[in-house]
Image (cartoon, rainbow, N blue to C red; front, side, top):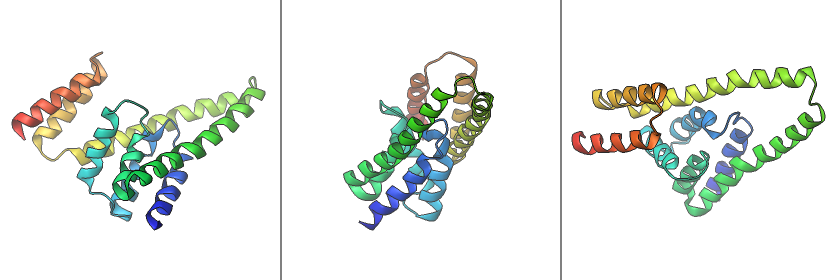
Length: 172
């Protein structure tokens, strides 16, 4: 039961910081689950993140996978509810306030300020995952190629995942 409380507290707090989605909290999730709680190794975290993002559905599935790893199916459910419920309530409140003040200058400023914050949080998450996943020259090369192809082409990310899987099977 203690693990369920820790899961609920961790993801409940992070839920309120998930500006731009759960991916913006990935660095903090990694820091706590790897360095503080020792629930996962860095390699496990990267693998769980990859698994969660290949499954259909929202990007919040990483917390479900972590919760399930720590405390079984109930842990996965608690983690998911804790990550979704507080943010959902806050979003409903903000939407109601924003709707009342459609033309207010402070609203436009708040929205404009959130864009770079969200971008920075998501870039921090990408950087963390890239560093944890790169274990040698091959994975570093694959990461750089995938990043470049994602940025410069319209290639669907699933092709990149498939290509990385094939290269990994052949060379690792």
